Length: 143
Image: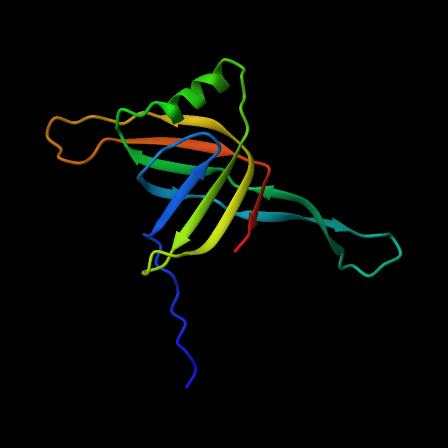
């Protein structure tokens, strides 16, 4: 009988960024890729247009984490606001039950485009969450 291959769980992962040490992201979402469809038809062809590949587009990635004393990601956003855009490589790594890296997505030329501070509520017991949305110019699965 063949070995069973179960899918990896989505709650075991880590995120690495050039020069930023940030632990414990509670959520990473939005990393996707798509290609625009360009329709083209010449006047002497049938009524159905050809469909050609257009521009490749990548969705923005949202990182969420519990507030700590780390200012690294906030400072990255502040630098961008002040016109000092530092593009970084961001790597998202899925981890299996044994703790091994099993799938890796590399995001290139990433820079922050939106920061959201936590909301506070005196009657809540939830963790305060910060968010950073990053734009990028490409994504590859390397493993």
